[in-house]
Amino acid sequence: MGGCTVYSLIVVPPATVPEDSGRRDRLRLAPGERLSFGRAPQGNGLRIAHDGVSRRAGEITAQGSFWLLSNLSREQTYVVENPEGAGEHIKVGPGRLDAPVPFEFSRIVLPACGDLLPLEVWAPCHEHVRHDAGDDGTATAPAFSLDRSKRYFAVLAALCEPRLRGAPHAPLPTVEQVVERLRPQWPAASRAAVQWNIDYLAVKLRLKPGPETADPGPRLNGKKESLVSLALRFDLVREDDLTVLAAPLRQRVR
Image (cartoon, rainbow, N blue to C red; front, side, top):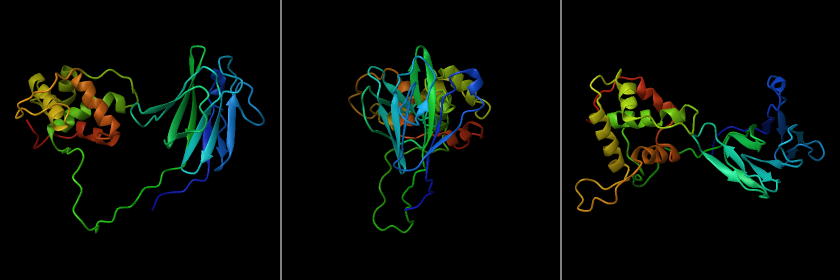
């Protein structure tokens, strides 16, 4: 196993008033330590001075390479977002204790009388298995076979771009907008060519049967939404991949 070691969880309180925004103190938790938060938390907890926050809103527990969130409110669901995950999030319902949160960088969103208060949590960096190049045996077939040098991948990246740029609920670009986005690198881009690549991606990623099958399957509504959802859910397109939108498109499909 390899990776890096960080011995504390860092919690950044929300700015409940404008003058707090420049002086938010970061709190550190060692593994096993707990931090309660709310309008009137117990002990040395984190006080969030907002009338819409429960007196005892919740509790954070550091646990090695992940952390736990307890929602102590009676009615309010909390959302924990991964700001680097293009909309990836988990929901922690009222009364749920010790829900594990796997994100390295997280944002707990606390609904409070029309406001959404962000409580940031920075977890220890994750460790990953190091795969040796000399592993014996037959190679495993890839789950999704995508060639990042092809035009279809540039089309997919353009579709995913708004949500990868930090707007997880952004509307998807239209076909015309994708054409304009790709035209500097692909001067011959057209609506028909982009649509062809979208249809090709739907077949390649098995969202619909190929033309060689006798059964065309059910009509795929929301094709772009389905493609982007699949691509972001399985990290088929990451923020680093957006560099293909600035590179000349050579040796592409279609």
